[in-house]
Image (cartoon, rainbow, N blue to C red; front, top):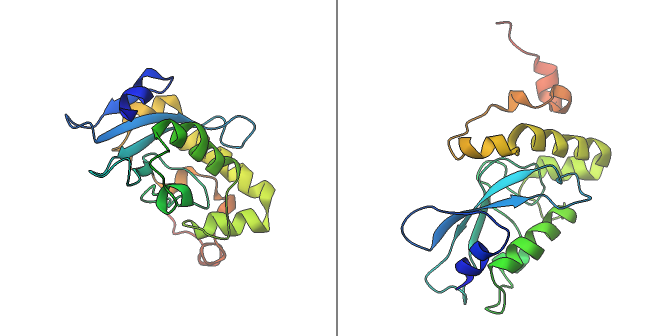
Length: 173
């Protein structure tokens, strides 16, 4: 089965329950990308009809990416959501699909509109924010704290405040 193949590979797999249909996989950002220093816990849920129906894939710890919903961790990726084939397996997800997603974001079909807009407007600032999220939310020492992590966005640089926040200012403590 696919889960066993994933467990026998170089990925750390942690079962969420006794059922083999829900588990977590540690996933490292691809080399030569702003995500390369990151380590994420990916939630995988296999539907009853797997492999004929695609798995549900989501980031547990935060990632700054146009095609990943920042709050839920849901992934917008055609090959998983629409064009899945039973010829694909979980190794494809972690060795091809997710690395490709991080290497080649699609800002024209965003789940995170802020990340998409920043990527198109100021790519250098976008990459800086990606790296900052990696430092804040995607470090190996954070793996033990997931999924309960409830960090405030204030941990991330204030360089990225929206214009409304800049105009409103901040209340004195």
